Image 1 (cartoon, rainbow, N blue to C red):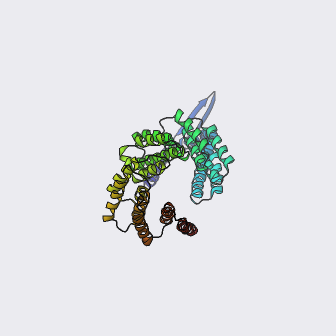
Image 2 (tube, one colour; image 1 turned 45 degrees about the vertical axis):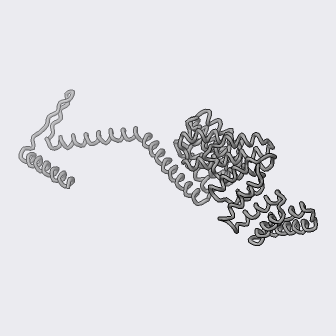
Amino acid sequence: MKYLLIILLTLFIATTIGSIVIKDTGYVLLSISGWKIETSVVLFFIILFIIFSLLYFLIRSLVRAWQLPEQIRTWKVNKKQYLSEKNIIDGLINMSEGEWGKAEKNFCKAASNSKSPYIIYLFAARAAHAMNSLDKSNEYLRFAHNHEPNAGPAIGLTQAELQLNQKQIVQALATLNNLQEKWPEHLLTKKMLLEAYTALNDWQEVLKLLRSIEKEKLYTRDEIEIKKHNAYVGLLKDAGISDDKNKLDNIWEEIPRKLKYHHHLIEVYVREKLKFKDISDSEVILKNAIKKKWDRKLVRLYGLVIGIDPDKQLATAESWLNQYPDDPILLLSLGRICVRNSLWSKAKTYLQKSLDIRENSDTLFEFANLYQKQGDYKQATVYYEKGLRLDKVRKRI
C-alpha cells in the first residue's frame, strides 16, 4: 500500500510538470566566463537530473568503498562467532553422548574462533581428561590461563576437580588450598576441600571445614550430620589403631551429645575400646542405647564387654528375653556372659538354643571356648573345626 501511494504521487507530479511544460516550454540562459548556453527548461532539468544522479552514485560508491574494509571485518567476526557457537554446541552434544574425541576437536575449533576461548579450553580439558589424556588436559588448562589470567577460580576449580577424579588427592589439595588463600569467598572451593580431606582421611580438617560450611548453609542439616558422623567414626577408628585409650576416650567426649545417640557411633567406639583393658563403662553405654532402641549389633557387643557387676549385667541381658526370647544374637551374648561367670550349664543352654535357631560360627567358637575352660579339649577341638568349616563355606558363598 505504501509503495502504491508513492508511485501514484510520482505519476501525479510528473503529469503536472508535463502539462506545464507543454503549455510553456520556456528557456534557460547560462553565462559562464563569456560563454553563453541557452536551452529549454525541460532539457536543462534533464541534464541537471543526470548530473545529480551521477554525483549521487559517485559519492555513494566512494562511501561504500571507504566502508568496505570495516564491513568485511564485521562479516568475518560474525562468521567466526557463528562457527564458534556451532562448534560449542556440537562439542556439548558430543560430551553428552560420550564421544570425547569429537568433543575435544569441536572445542578446539570453537576456541580458535572465540573472543573468550578460556571457557572453551576448560571444556576441552574435561574432554581430554575423560580420555585419560592428562598431558593434553593440563595443556588446555594452561591455554585457558594464558588467554585469561584473571579467571583463576574457574580454571583452578576445574583443575582440582579433574585431579580429584584422577585420585591425585595431594595435588588437588595443593590446588584448592591455593584457591582458598587467594579467593576465600568461593564456597565451591570449600566443598571440594571437604572432598579432598575426606579422601585423605584427615578427619580433624573435615570437622573444621564442616563448622565453616555449616554457617554458609552449603548442605542441609541432615547432610552435615551425616558428614560429621562419618568424620567421628574415622577419628574413633584412627584412635583405636594408634593404641591410645586416652585418645579414644577424649574423642568420644568431644562428640556432640546428639551424635552420641547414633548406634553406629556407639558400635564403633565400643569395638575400638575392646582392644584395651578396663572397658566396664562401655557396658552402661550399650545398656542405655539398647533400652532406647533394639540393635543386634549392640547386643552382640554387650556380650563381649565386661561390666563392673557381672551378675547385674547377666540380669539385664536376661530381662531382654521377655521381648526377644528367640533372638540368636541375644542368646549368644547370654551364653558368653555365663561362660565368663563360669555358669557352664546355663551357658550351654543359651548357646545351644542360639545354634538351634541359627547356626553361627561365633556361637560354635564360644562353645569351643566353654569346653576349653572346662578342660574338655577334645570337644573344644570339635567345635573349633565346625566353626572354621562354617566360616569357609560362608566365605565361598
